[in-house]
Length: 218
Image 1: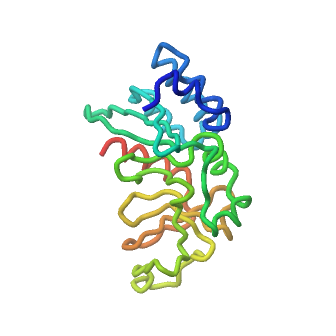
Image 2 (image 1 turned 120 degrees about the horizontal axis):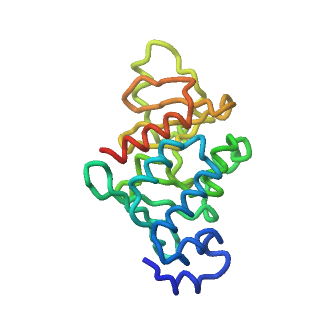
Image 3 (image 1 turned 30 degrees about the horizontal axis):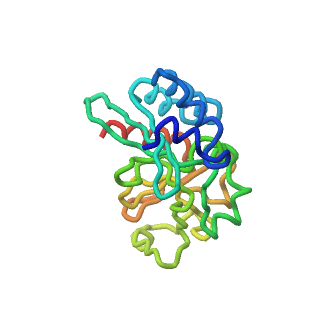
C-alpha cells in the first residue's frame, strides 16, 4: 500500500490525475466521495445500484503497487458485517488481448468509458471474479482451447458468433456476460455459460449491475 508521500512521488503518467486528488483529503469519506464521482460521471446510469451500494458500504480506499502496476483497493463492509476487498486497476494501463484489440473501437461506448476512465476491471480481489475483469483477462469465446460442452446439450443452434464474442464479466464459475460484436448495439449482450443454457438479448449493464451487488452480499 502506498503512502501519500509515495503517491506524490509517482511520475505523472503512472496513475490518473484524479487518483492523486483522492488522497490529498484528510477525510477518508471525502476521498471516497471523489472516487465515486468518477464512477457517476462515466457510468452513473449503467451501474447506479453498484454505486449506491458503494456509497453506503465502502469504508476505505487505498492505492496498491503490485510489481509496478497500480490499483485502487476497495474495502467494503457488507450488510452482514463481512469485510470484502475489491480491486480496480489503473484505466490508463489496460492491456487488451490480440482478438479484442482489433475490435475495441466497435465496443459499446459505455463499456469503453468504464475501462478507459474508471478502472481496467473491477472485481473481488481474492478470485478476480464477480465483476468486470481486466482487459487482459477478457474471455475470447472463440478460443480453440476452450471447450463449451453446453453446445452439445442445446436443442437449437446458438444465436451468437463465438468468434466475435467476448466475456467481460465473469462469476468465476464458468459463466460470463458476453458481447457479440456482430450484435452489440444498445449494449445488447448474452449470458453465456459452460453449463447453463444461454440467455440472449439481455442488457449488458443491467446484468452486470445486478451481479456485482449480489457479489457484495454473498
